[in-house]
Length: 383
Length: 198
Image (cartoon, rainbow over all chains, first blue to last red):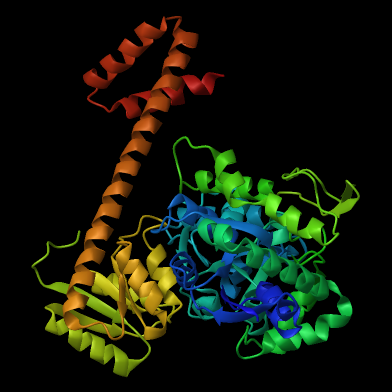
């Protein structure tokens, strides 16, 4: 007799472990009959998880924290013991904005590290000419996309609240919004950067991993209450997802993975867009260049599935930096309640997998991968 | 600002399914709402809503634009509006639970018209509560900011003018009264003059 559960997901390439666990039978092996429910909006995923329609969900890491804090309408304690992977986002701008930026740096496409300071010049000139603020889209206010964009701008002293305008546009609509000149740029996950480039409506100027290498992105969210009452199912769910993530990391499984993701009931994007997203190539057909970004998205290696508490801490600091939360509160307590390294550790150790013994790691210090306690950790440089 | 209950509320409906939105539009109208426009979702939705300036929005939960509408108040302090979700019956648990927990803002497809009215009413009440909380937060934030600036200005006066902290504090209050400026403005002036010399 299989245990029936429902899991909500957003059709993006990083939901792959859910699809693979279902299609390759990892859920079934664990005695789980999982119904995957595709959702078009993050608010829907949050509501359905909070109100018990879903048992678990593919969720923006900051949304889990915001919901626990009661920052987005509903307050409900959520937790995660599994990360869907690292990185995967990028910033793309319209062709018009890119042209304006090229005036300051003709080789811009090759130097992502200069993009923020060049953008600052454009913003300054627009201000002097009394032109409207540049408009950037993110997928949700509580998202890594928003914080990465904010941090990237802040490195050159551009204030996300003052100097640009930010609005929310759902991922599936950003390319159209760019084309219709509703926005000048966006920070979004794949395949929507590649897609804009392929349609020649925009240019990808910097990837998320070039802003913060090996940054968190989506997590498996459950309510604290559900985790308490269904700990056995939760354990099996995470073990199945871990096996799926490991499967994804094997290069020989790539063609099968792409065909699963492209399916109508899952991501439903053209095979070619998904391919580029997974291969770590940031291309530009107009300028005939491709830049290899090997860490563009990491589903498994470098302990990508471990729910690092240092990730949650950075997210909370960003929430404060952009003014979403204020006042004195105990960041450490929120982090410990939401990012359950203890659960992840217990589940993986039971299957003989070695896991980090620490809950947090250094962020923003390492330029190259390093070995820590016998496991390899990725770079963690923050711009 | 939202009008008081009892006035004619102007509602915008966002739905791709025109037959369904026509039905809901009728139900809302029967309950005394004025459905001023039925919009199709898309990137220009915000601009259209900004032009129409409705009192509230009812949107189909199957529309990805829900995230956009829900976030309007969270970014850039745009003019926020109460948003009510219109859900299909397969989301019945969510609708029931949402209403039970007082979050509301959800209407199921088969909700009878009388219920529609009370759901809309609760949604507006909740929205107002939330706005009031947010305004209070902004107020506290700016008070904190003023406090910080006055402290900094005081410290600069003590360092540069060789006064006691007490004297510095009184000097700032006196300047504020004499110049008819807010404490924050006076502190800012002191910081920009004395802070530069370092």
